[in-house]
Image 1 (tube, rainbow, N blue to C red):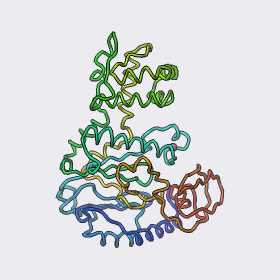
Image 2: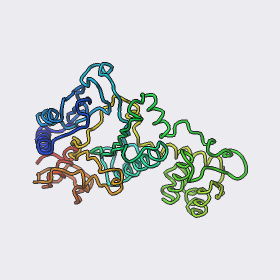
Image 3: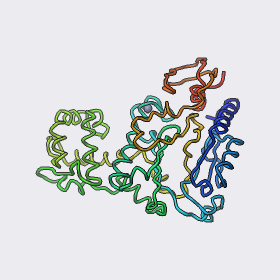
Image 4: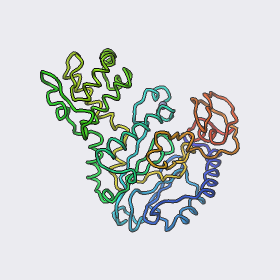
Length: 381
Ligand SMILES: [Zn+2]
């Protein structure tokens, strides 16, 4: 749904004030390509280049674009067209994690365009898993190699900036995203006798690579109880049975013995569990983003035009677990706005809860009113 002209004008004037006051700054600004969006299209035009952050700020203050993206690539001539003539120097390795792709239960209630606390917690967990289980454990990157920012709406962006990866081709990046997505994994690689008879042996929690991911992932679901187990696509009855034998199973899996529970059609049962786990390990990552060396991604420190929240850069990976985007990414804290809210679930933002509302006139703090306006749930009164 298109945003109204009064609402667009209000949002643009707030964005302009924000950029005038706080500025905007990118590393290697002169080597990056920029793209700006409007309220309908996140990247409406691209191939822009700026010689300095001052020049970038001047343009941003003048246009107040609802979306600002930049290239993860560095180029000799970032404004060059077509892409091939830019003189590619290398690209960050990036991962775009979005809660929309997690198929969460809460999304069945509030729909895909809305985001709730559960969505944000779930995508945070996925981000932590990507960083710890894959980027640190499997690929050996360190905390200094990654930066993280809230996307401004429903997820997180992870940037790996290290000499070892800048020159990787698109094909090589695809190998990394395929590995993380578990593409091409065969259960038999980890459970040699899954289809046969006898005690089923499998990976241990301490194993390196995917074996360890599978073992630890299964233990964490066991600890999450029957509901978490059912997310693996198994029946309520089997989930209950697994939960009842949790202690033995956790002990067994930690030592590589996966045969602690008697279930019917054992081979099918484990195959489906393993299959669904490899998918859910990383199904929130947009692989096209990772594979594309010319991708434009939201610039940290800019406003997201669908929320009015800032795509805040985190102060290191260690701050992720305690990071609350609906508090930390709120700007526009002064003043209030009168709005008519058509239909909105409750929203926790800036430390308070607003709503749910249905066809009601409200006076809300600017940030909360703006959030509902940009989410197309409210209009100015
Ligand atoms: Zn949700």
